[in-house]
Amino acid sequence: MGIEIKIVPDNAALNRVAASEFQNAAESAIAERGWLSVALSGGNTPRSVYSLLAAEYKTALPWDKVHIFFGDERHVPPGHPDSNYRMANEALLSKVPIPAGNIHRIRTELDPESAASDYENQLRAQFGLSKTDLPRFDLILLGLGDDGHTASLFPGSTALEETSRLVAPNWVEKLKTFRITLTLPILNRAAEVLFLVSGQGKAQILKEVLGSPGAMEFPAQRVRPQNGRLLWLVDHDAASLLPLESQPNL
Ligand code: 6PG
Image (tube, rainbow, N blue to C red):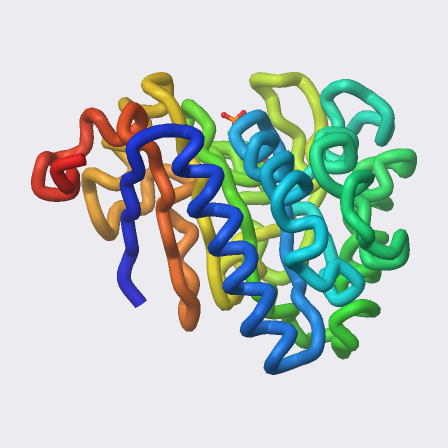
């Protein structure tokens, strides 16, 4: 399946479209399988999407059938300001009627290696997988870092080349810290991957990542679901350096 690029006027529009993509994925997954598996992204961009879901989809979505996972996590305690879990909990999970058992947190109180193995076991348990099967997420939300990283798959980092583990600890030299991240085999097995990219600050890297189709220079370029939808949802400012033909007259 090809790359879909949807350019919207601004961050508010991006939040609305992202929330409706979430709802669409939920409706079809729950109709087909009885539950939605979604991996949330960390960082700043998705926070306002999560807030909109909490504000406008509290009763519109059957949260008891939604299972929340995380695409990656910083190796900090769950209450730490840098915690992706904390961000998602404050913006969304603590504000909607989702059972605690449906929130699958990366247990960063463990060392990075144990946290990654534990999370792989959590995935296998919830998806009901054998030792060799791979989970197929209904929806994975991702962001784009200034260096072209996504989830916690940073350029030149070991987890980027992981081919068998579902979840890997990843030392990020430039941040001098560990992250725990879903690996490319999992990202590329998803039914839908939704990149959220907002703001002028992302225009240059977005141009480099989307400007040369087929290139595999940046980690984000290596996210190509084999049998799934790949949607880049970007706002006008982030898209400002993309070739004009990909910029509908907004
Ligand atoms: C994280 C994210 C990471 C993020 C990008 C973009 O834990 O930081 O998962 O991949 O999506 O760094 O972050 P911003 O949305 O803050 O620009």
